[in-house]
Each structure stands twice: as C-alpha cells, then as structure tokens.
Image (cartoon, rainbow, N blue to C red; front, top):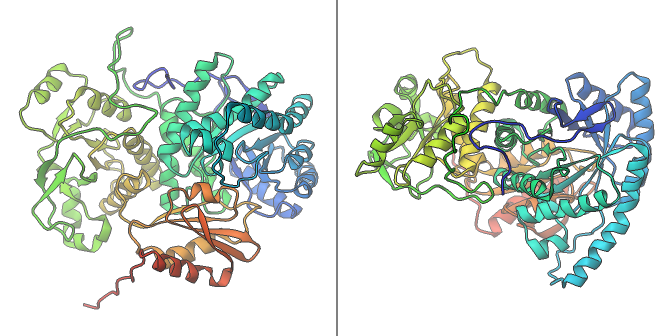
Length: 601
C-alpha cells in the first residue's frame, strides 16, 4: 500500500473538487481553513456574532453543532442573519447521534458533518461476536438510516464530511476491528460506500484522534485504501488533531499531526482544535496551511530508484539502535557525568555550546527543561545522507556513533533525516534537527518556530526516527529547550509532565472548558506521567480517554462524571466539587503526590 507518491519528495495528493457553498475544497484550490463556534446553537445572535468574528480573521468554513432537531431548525435563523449582514461564509452542521437533526439541518446549511461511529448507533460498550450475517444486517440498518440524508444532500447540492473520531467508534466496529486506525478507516468506508451506491460524491473524509501517532496512521491508511479502491475514490481530506488542548501544547500537538500529513501531500482543509476562543485557532491553521513543502533540492536523480524508507508508514515502531554514552550537561537531572542515547533510552535534548553559555548560570532553575548534553561535546558525526562515501565510512565503523545531517544542505529537513535513517545501519543513534538552517533572528515570531519545529521533528518521531533532538529554529535558549521537551511530550516520545487531552468548546459543552481546564491544571500539573482527559460532553469522551488515566466529562448541565480510563466511576458530581473529587479519585488509584513546597533561600 502507498499513501503518497514519495516519502522523500513533496507532491500534493490529487483529488476531485467538492463545493461547500462558495468555497471549493480539493483539486488545485488552496488548503482551506475552518473552525467551530462555541456558543449554544439556540442563541442566534451569539452564533451570528461568533461566526462573523471567525470570518473576519480568515476562517473560510464555520461549523455549528446541531445536537437536536430544535438546534438544527434554528440554523435557518442563524444562516439568514449571516446572509442579511453580508457574511457568506459556508456553514457546516455538526451532527452526532440524531439522523433527524441532520435532515433538518440539511435544509439550511451548505454542509453536514456526520460521525459514522454514532450517527445511527448508541454506544453500549458491549462485547459481541458478530457473524458475517449479523454484520451485514447491521450495515443494512445503517443504510436505511443514512440513505435519506444522502439523497437529500444530492438533490439539494449539499456537501458532507464523513468524519471518523478515534474516540467514538461504534460497538460494531470496535468488536470487529478494535480501537485501531483500521477500525477508523473501515467505519468511514462503510458510509462512503452507501453514498457512492446512491451516486453521491460531494463528500470529504476525516480521521481525527487526540493521539498524533494514531491520527497520522489512520489518515495514511485511509488514503492508501482509497487509492486501492480506484482512481475515482479521490475524495478530499479534512485534517485535524481532536482534543489537542490549549497554549503551546495544543499548537505543538496540532502541528505534529497536521504538519506531518501536509508534508506527505495529504490534506485539503484543516481545523486546529484548541481549548481557547475559536478565533485563536485561525492564525495557527493559516500558518500551517501556508507552509511551502516543496522547497529543497531533489534527493534522487530523475528516474532513479528511491531508497526504501526505514519505517512502516502505517504502524509505529521506533528505529533500533545501540546505546552509547556521551558527556552530560552537569545538572540536577543526572547522577553521573555521562548520558545514554539510543536503544531504549528516552530521546535526549541537545543544546549548542553558545546557547548553553548564555544560560549556564541558571541551568538548575530550568526545572524540567534542562538540556541533556552539549552538541559540540557529544562527538556527533555530521554527514550529507546523499554522499555514498560518508555513509559507507560511518557504516564501516566498529563502534556506534551519534549521527546527524549537516547544516546548510538545500534539501527538505524531513526528507534528509528519512534518507539518513534509511541508509544508516541500525546500530547508530540519530540526532534530529528541526531545520538545517539555524535561525539567528531574535525577532522571528515564536509561532513560526514552534510550528516548523513541531511539524518537522514531530513527523520524524512519529515515523519512529530519532534518539536525540536539537532545536535550531528558535534563537532564545530557554524557549528552544522548552519547545524541545514539549515536542517530545506531544509526540508521546518522552513524558516528563502531566498530559492533558482537552477538547475545544462547542454548543454541546456542558461547562466552561477554558476555566475548568485551567483549574484542573492548577491542581494537577505536578503529577508527572499522569494523563487526564477533560471533555465538555460525552460525544467523544470515553473513546478519546482510551489512553488517559482519568477523565472529567460533562454529564449534564452543572454535573460532571469522572472516569478511570473508559469506565465512568463517579456520576452527577456538582461542578463546584468536581475538581476536588477528581483529586480524590487520583489518590484512590495511587497516582497522587503532593506538590513540592518551594523552600526560601
């Protein structure tokens, strides 16, 4: 299977064009940026205001939740109010659970988003062994529920997104395929086949997850499967990391997932999901969409065979290497004067000598962001992965060496390290760089550095490549170190702090996500290695908490349910008590530690 024409050279995937109102997605059109409003859909004026605010900052498509038929009917008034005020941004109705709401919403909006995991299913988390006959009967039931919407959209020129979420796969899919990227893909294809049987093609796909590795694998597998189905399965792709969180962490996680796929030429429209006001998503999405992925000289001569990559694009596995020891930065993190790199060691963080000299006097105050070693003292070998003699020399060495790509090469950073990993014998650990052109611009916007570093290093880490990393695109030493560690955390490569899965707010949300997330973080940020999910409603809650230790989920207005993994264990807790009850739950399961008390010096 292949999900792109080359893992070394950028080429955007060719797709058909799907029209959403006055906006065309796919084909030669630019990558479209979209977002979602956060207010109650029944609040017409607030919905109009938030939509216009998004359009004013460059959002090209706006999504509004329609959890009930009543909400869906109010979309008529929202759309009419927008058009009366001269705002022509296309509106998408976000549908979960209720086909009746979808049918009502389709009367008023340009696009319908359906989630195959819950459009015609209510999750019971039952373990059922479906026979082929029973499975076929389930598909026929889905066809009966879904076909009326498809026919309506076809007749009235409405577009659709078949949007699978890792957190809300149906019991049918879970029992046959498991909680896997394959299950996500099959869930979407079941609905797509129904649409195609009815000769309806105005749809796009999405495969969202809060875990960038799962998200990347699912999209790659989807595109490969579409290619196998035939050339007319060339539907556009909507990209997004769901429940990415807020602040730097949310931006980094989004850049890893979305940026990795854009690097592979996949993606026609994107949404960056942040637990913040929606207008803050747009600059991030526009920056990611505007990256020029084709820059860089060719790695192979025209017509020459490409070196097979060292990784399976559809299944994560860390590249093997031998463990070496190099001089460590003397700090509170190391009990010895050396640090291990490679084999089963966590990825290490390097710093240039010049930058270290600027912070050496305060390195202990950096806490979790202390560097592991100094680049110039590590004995790292810099090579051009295209040079046969350089590759042969290092591969003939008796002992393993830390190896990296030399700076100044006019080639894509991701492609360069993929080629290095492919040509280097497995015994040598690899040091990743975010760019081969170090920045010395103190005025460079930090968001630009964050997105470039996250997309490049994050992509490689999710390919299983990398035993150490060096940030060169950010000039400030402290910020570059913080960025390095946060990229490792977001990619799941080195967990050094509490991990949060926090959904963006929408009209389904049953509490204020931003303030609640802030309160939970204030109480739990010291719990290193604990993963906490914060969900505004039940739509994706249990599934997206598959990897989380604990979950805080809106169950009803003013009420919160607490989870351990996917299992709800505390119900209808008053919101005012819920954070303290979450702390009690963490204590019950032996994962609570008291925060350190600062000692005056």
